[in-house]
Image (cartoon, rainbow, N blue to C red; front, side, top):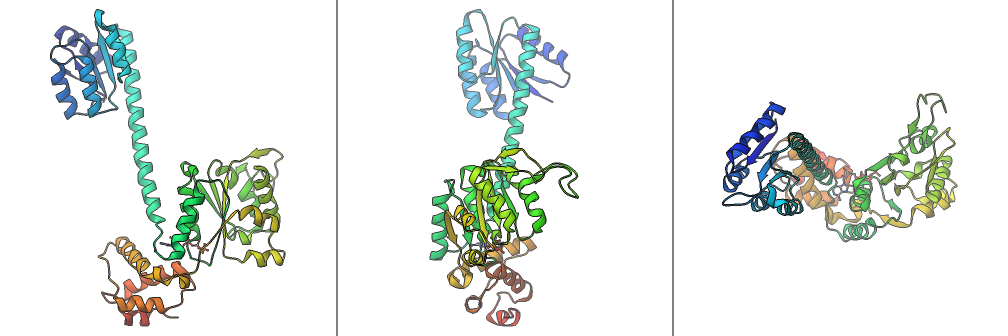
Length: 394
Ligand SMILES: Nc1ncnc2c1ncn2[C@@H]1O[C@H](COP(=O)(O)OP(=O)(O)OP(=O)(O)O)[C@@H](O)[C@H]1O
């Protein structure tokens, strides 16, 4: 139900405009103002979809009303009505942000055409704004999910590395034990890169059976193997203009490694069972918990691929090597868990934190998070050293 405001000092023209509009579409809600000041007061109070505004008016002329109104609502479409002597001002109005102008007396078709276009444009602007807001909210959610907590030197060095490499196209190999935050690092690199408008596509190379990994990465053509019922794009194609994150790359089969190498060398892929080469513009980030030097020595990993991937190497140390991060991580997880459970946050006593620091954390941050959750559920409030001794079994 579009809301249209007519600002016009001549009642006869106002009536003509109102009749044209309401005859054209019964859903149009038309309001009127007899001068610029009254019009501005209405614009302040209500979100109109279109303003039809005369140029020559007492008190405030159309140009002034336009400028003041656009300060209040920059997306408001203005259709100016110009008399004989004020075409120049009408052109000026367009330069200052009016959508269009029509001459007096208003020509029916020209007026309705312009009204339709202006209303369509306004609804597109609205949709665009809603999408942008949703996108922002989603990004905020995602970045909350990927918050990187801790102030150890090791973590600060990683942050510095991320800031240096993010905006480049360099491939990054992230190494470190399980649960240390390698995936988190990859997300930060992608989010801080110019590719962040496109997605980061993740592939867990260890979770995909070796006979399927090539099809997963490069896609396949219908009938190329049993179960290939239709053509399918692979992750490299889906990540075009964005980032692909090859997690657990140390677990990839040698034949898939050969294909990944070709994709990296030539920026081209071929779907399984296909013969067409497809150009892909993808930044590659990879991670592994394996010692790739050893894997290369044992013939399980291609040295040439290693050098292609490890242009920049980021080593994420285990939690035992940065125990000073434990306190802030516990605090952070306690808060997250409280929000998740919809309960008040539980505190941890100093002794409890010290006891947690004295533990060895082979499962690293993932393990710490689980332990914090367990202590919150089973422990006292505040969580004590005794709780740690009772519920953290090593
Ligand atoms: N510095 C940190 N601050 C907050 N949360 C963290 C931090 N590091 C890791 N985490 C969290 O710990 C969990 C494990 O991290 P992540 O999955 O990034 O580790 P990973 O090294 O990729 O693990 P894996 O090798 O098992 O795939 C995730 O929930 C992640 O959000």
